[in-house]
Length: 270
Ligand SMILES: O=P(O)(O)OC[C@H](O)CO
Ligand SMILES: [Mg+2]
Image (cartoon, rainbow, N blue to C red; front, side):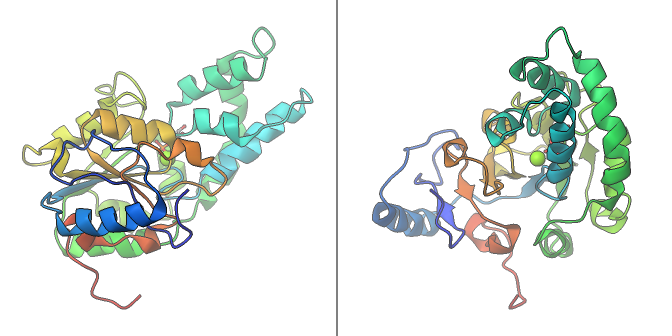
């Protein structure tokens, strides 16, 4: 379980391929290996890819609220074990899972569910706020000229609604890849969206020099399949069994330490 201190580094030697995991250790082992891993960190991160929903902006509670509303009509309840399967996926893919898992096949089609959900979300999305630590980290990476981008399962239409108040932050991104991008054949947990995002940086980037920030199990799996490192910032209601694949778990981006990944350290005391 990630320590409440917020920093939990899975034990691995930084020079090993990011997909190699040694599994969990006791906490004392962890602390030793964390120090060893940090000291042995030869892997320099040169580029960063951010997930969006639930990582940069607080849109996930709106998805939960609306999905609860839809289920109320059928006297069914929504829970986090289902949410864990939906997060980060392309809209139509998560809709199919929702209808099937909730036993609504033949009653509500995924397309009908999406239409109802997106209709309810239209009013909520414009009030999406940035999550803690986002503005500080993105501004810091921008000032230090670290290339970064966004890779989100959100479609363009909902992306514009969610980000309309945060133009300055998203303007610091080199590019933004969305769920309805024609080059993204499969949604997370397929690696497609992170591979497309990596290929759109100015220069060829070794996936092992890319750090991904994600909140969802599907996103973490996609980043690992793409051969990248991944910091997971999960909602505290997400069961810890979904944390396994991440290279680091944080309770908030406020706890992120850039120098642990070879990135320029924060200079403010914040
Ligand atoms: O990839 P994310 O986390 O920005 O999320 C995408 C949403 O789940 C879109 O439906
Ligand atoms: Mg997300």
